[in-house]
Image (tube, rainbow, N blue to C red; front, side):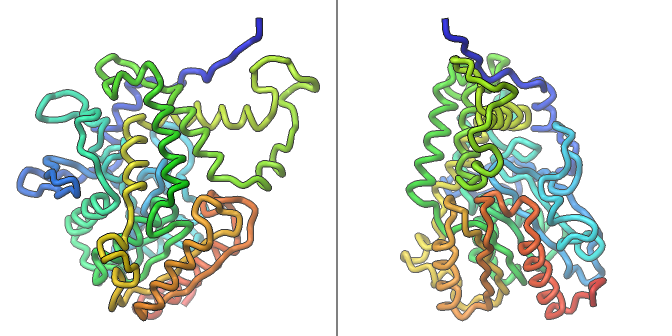
Length: 400
């Protein structure tokens, strides 16, 4: 008989994960019936809450606030130890003391998006009308919905204008939505490895992941919480498939090649003979420790629906007409998920709207995930852009 090993169950229990869903370790802003969140699907979400983290201090003029927008599998723990996994913040390469986004200079805010599972209201949260987990009864959300919720939080914090909005991938989509929906509230925008709309290929990859989740018998049509289980195998496979798109062939070859995992000869089984197989299985099993399967469905669908030009007669430049925001758009040569051609299309639209925009294509073989890794040129560009915008804004920084 051929040996078969499936993806193991997560080491962290569902109870540990679910505690962060409604009672997170981070601060929470609650919004009652008098402040509903108007969703694009036509539903008013109320009540709801937004979990967030802040770093640094807001200056007297309230002019140094930087909003960090997280990517699909991120959360608000951008620069602190994650309460579930115990791992460092997901963007400590860019955010932190001595980094381009330094809390000694800026008041940094990062929220968990609506639809997430780390404290902001989403499908894993308790529906107050039923006392049970929302599951698929939760309304479908969009990138504009996420940004509206963030804007309500920024209002709650007493901030009129954000000095900068920064994000990559799905976070970059939020950055662009902020500038299109609230142009007068964003002084500068750093949009990284993103696009103004999701491509057919990206929608296809997301559908593959969603089908993997829904094919897991433990999914129970989205009602797995009622059964006290979690479709961890399906979600792990979805994560494995997605993670491949975040890398590049060159990076995978450099890191793994065809090297065997702790052996010299094949086992002639379906065990993880190759190092790359073991790596992907680890990515899948570690992901399910901190993420909710239904949230994965909702957030991927939000990315699929994103299309800024659609609200402006299909003309992208109209979305940014007359905008005063300063833009920096960054792409990476080996990113085939959000290729440079899509960043160039954004830059052309910004130029057509007479916006201030700088563009950088960074040479690297690290793929889409390069924005999360140690890429010095990216850090230098980010620092220079923010310092230049800060001087124009009248902010005082340690570097002048």
